[in-house]
Amino acid sequence: MTTQRHRDGGATIIGWGTALPDRIVTNADFEARLDTTDEWITERTGIRERRHGSTTAALAVEAGRAALDMAGLTGDDIDFVLLATTSPDYQIPSTASQVQEELSVRGGACDINAACSGFVYGLVQAHGLIAMGLQRVLLIGAETLSRVTDQQDRNTAILFGDGAGAVVLEACENDQLLSFDLGSDGSARTLLDAPIGGYIAMNGKEVFRRAVTVMVDSARVSMADAGITSEELALVVPHQANIRIIEAACSRLDITADRVSTVLQETGNTSSASIPLALVRALENGRVAADDLVLLVGFGAGMSWASAVLRWTGRIPEGKS
Ligand code: UT7
Image (cartoon, rainbow, N blue to C red; front, side, top):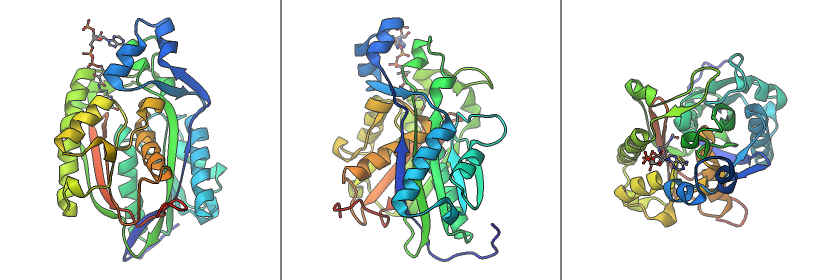
């Protein structure tokens, strides 16, 4: 689709969906075959189980279809598919191209690789496309990290999982996105990487240290740009890497645990999929009301970081207003 027009107004989320593979891998499963314990994994990460299986495209299609169904739309109503993923199915072409075909999306499609910050990067790009005149964008975060993790390496195997979360954004008068902060420090990119055809390697301690700092700094930038304080936030949706990172960052931001959405206990770290999975969980549990302020904040390989403040002008689940 081509467009010459710059649109007034903004965009808002009108539907969402998720997908997880059927196979549950528990801490006890790792305990049985690696030099680790359920106690170590739970205490150091908060993770109890994760899902393994499927392909990135299949999970993305399932989550995307659920989001379209909820919005009462078909692929023909969608002008662009943005797929945030760091575990694409192919080197070439984009995984989004398969999603575009399977959902019969009318418009363009491409992948975004900003690792665990990918969904928020995509959210901002979706707003940009809509500002340029598109009507609706399907934004998906989808990963099959179990394929790029050495299942014999206790340092990484216990952490990562597979899954997908999707939202449909539509042009509207009242923009949902109040502010954002996107960043990257490429000089630190070797702290967490996976060569083509290889497995994830990570300096966990250093990533942990930087994660807390960049989440706090980025959240402060976005809150300042939105003209709000952390007290005003109804919900925080952080990247789901480690419960200790989330607790440390939220404590520095004076955000109490009752305002934080977590799913990592059941999903592990699903990189680009983690923020939409945690956002959808909060929405389905009625934790977001009309006009609530919501902070999304993530960090990951690159090292990338991203945060955004939303005023929830979007859809609210039935009976949850
Ligand atoms: O999406 C963004 C990407 N990743 C992250 O955000 C991960 C950030 N980092 C982390 O979450 C944590 O650093 C880890 C969970 C990866 C590790 O926790 P830690 O508290 O930093 O542990 P550590 O790396 O300092 O390791 C402590 C000990 C070491 O043994 P020694 O050297 O003290 O004898 C490790 O070899 O724990 C050992 N260890 C394990 N023990 C049992 C490492 N992995 C395991 C394991 N089970 N799975």
